[in-house]
Amino acid sequence: MQNKKIKVLFAAFEASPFIKTGGLGDVAGSLPIYLKKDGVDIRVIMPLFSSISNEYRDKMTKICDFYVPLAWRNMYCGIYKLIYKNTIFYFLDNEYYFKRDKAYGFFDDGERIAFYSKAIIESILHLNFSPNIMHLNDWHTALSAVFLREMYREVDKCNNIKTVFTIHNIKFQGMFSKYVLDDITGLKGNFAAESQLMQSGAINYMRGALNYADRITTVSPTYAKEICTPFFSEGLEDVLCRRKNILSGILNGIDYEKYNPYKDNEVYVNLKPITKNITKEKDINEITKEELIEDKIKRITTFKSNNKMCLQADLGLDVDPNICMISLISRLTDQKGLDLITYILEEMLQYKIQFVILGLGDKKYEDAFNKFANQYKNKVSANIFFDESLSKKIYASSDLIMVPSLFEPCGLSQMIAMRYATLPIVREIGGLKDSVNSYNKYTNIGNGFSFVNYNAHELLFTIQNALSLYYDKKEIFNNLSMQAFDTNFNFEESAKEYIKLYSQLMEV
Ligand code: ADP
Image 1 (cartoon, rainbow, N blue to C red):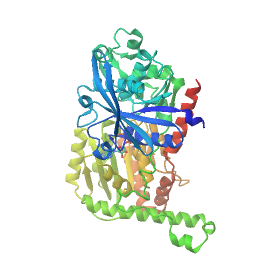
Image 2 (cartoon, rainbow, N blue to C red; image 1 turned 90 degrees about the vertical axis):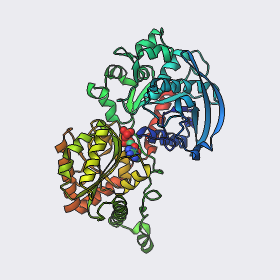
Image 3 (cartoon, helix red, strand yellow; image 1 turned 90 degrees about the horizontal axis):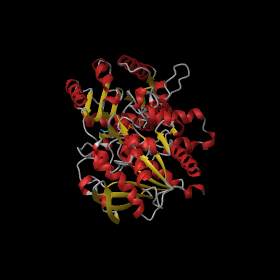
Image 4 (cartoon, protein in one colour; image 1 turned 45 degrees about the vertical axis):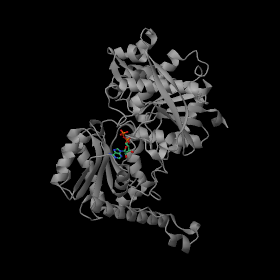
């Protein structure tokens, strides 16, 4: 009953399946749908990028249009609506800002994003929807928190709205020349806003949201602690420490319908449900726990071997289900610990393994992985592009996946991997620490492998440890794969935490 009163406008610059460049897209495309199922009246608001496919565009209906004041400009904004999985998505249309071949990385990002942040609030004035909470995600939406308080305080529809700001990655803050304050935000002369936005002589959008939001969240409990320290905070520890009492970490989940090994039609072979013979011969209550485990492990190993052989053939690798396949599915940036991987790769490739990379990013890593793929043709496959369908095939086929990040707010790839019974090898940091329970050789309990220090040889030893189980103690390895598969990362759990937070906020 209580949830019915919660009305949330959820703002994100990207949301899957419309547009996705990383984890934010996954979260914004699934968390609201889970919240809606739980009774929250939540609506997502995002840009109408020209890259959004006609499959969705054709189903959108135009609601209205208006002009958004942005300092001396008045910019057109149309709102289109689409109901996706029973949840309303609003798309903000402005071809000048959003008719581009990608979402980010333009000389005028400061202006495009300020426009988006202002248009979010202007939309509230034109929509037949009065949110009591605005849930803002990452720096692209940060200025909304500032505009709301500084420019719309007196507006009836806005003056009771509470703001939640979620940090998905503190590395990206939106820092621009101080001239943006006057020329784009129109906040020059507003000394309160100026002092909350300025940092080292520049304007920092995220700092603004951290100062103005009613609640700050981030995507794992460990990262919430880490970002209050200088190494992880990227220069924002002062404001985060000051506002520690309103900061919390809620671990992300994944969409269990989108990533579903039983039904996924993008993998080569699906995971079989419980073996019929077991249920046929005996009443389900008579089946022993051991029989169920044995059956599950058998189904998982068959699922993985069959997928692996198809992928090996497709990628031109030696086709052999008994070779351990290690993968990397990631943005190719320093954050992801790729210098550790490139440092030990030559040594790693001396073992009986295959290494499959799917990623896009910094040229130095793209070149390095391409070089190894040329040198070790039957062992390494470097796929330097973005392809969700291939990513699922790799998750389903691999035995191990590497996520040795320098820092990791939450990380979804290790969770998706586990959903497909692939064991992650991670560094004990941020959300990786909160989601991976490292193999314990005394109890044989674990859903992955981990190491502590940012050190290439610690990573290599961890890989060696995993490989020795794979080749010499296969039973234990298979049992760990099952434990990974059994770990629950369904977004339902995180959604409950957000509802608790929204409810508390509405009582304030
Ligand atoms: P981040 O948000 O820092 O990029 P996450 O682990 O939180 O990292 O999320 C990454 C998401 O992007 C996962 O869904 C992963 O499968 C996906 N991904 C990363 N690179 C690629 C790629 N080249 N092709 C397809 N999917 C990718």
